[in-house]
Image (cartoon, rainbow, N blue to C red; front, top):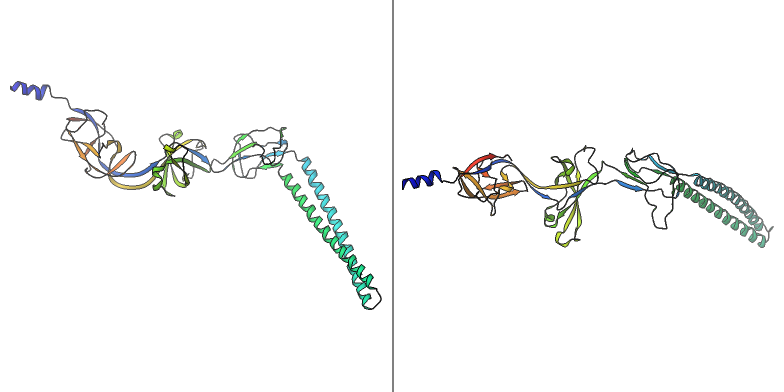
Length: 369
């Protein structure tokens, strides 16, 4: 009998299960919301431009990848025809002014004649008919003077239009940026489009310094969001690195294109002054919006939690199931407000059925938070 007991307790006793643990300690825990699908890095300043007129491309002093300052010439259209239009309009203004001067001088003379006729009529030296004719002539001349002045204004307006049209032959950068694309060549004719339709863009300009991230958030998290919550931005192109940001915009409606996956579009600005040069518009990005933060609290990895808010703790070589109260939590860490103390050893290798309460264990490794 003693032999059987010895065999059961010593020889055939199950070997302790190897587990990996984490030692409960204090630290920082955040409550966060993450995007539903991958977001996108975008630029607030991007302009796909074309000249406001048709014409022959005379000069393109930039190419793809050229950094430009605000106001730099990007493209010139042959302006010879438009310069002639300006010169013609200038001559029209000169002619209109001369005609107005002549008409107004004549009106002034007729006004003086009218006053003299009135004086003579007062003395009985001029008839009423002569007075009436002088008054009519003066009034007609004054009207002609006013009409001539209006023709001057009309000619000046036509000159302004011709000058604006001439100015359109030079396309300048509306902001400092980088040329993304040029889709025309010197010598090509930029054809006019039908009324109401823009000429297709020939230069694409973007400001890589005005970057932000747009991403969809699940509708279940909408009530917890507000501007300007802090944001952590990560990108596949910069694995292992995150960038600080601020929530800057919440859409005013929920997307319902896919009714089972309704989302709210949010935007986040980068708060870092200098980003790497290869943070480019179009990169995929993820947002981790920080709703709340608690410092110096007991915490464990979120994946160490079992169903029903329990954890397995190593005590005297055996696993014990311990109920816990969870506070703030995110996908990585969870605050424990009750049930554990600093120094407790919580099992994190939970992927085997033999890792359960009551099992004899051997600590094979320890991970850090």
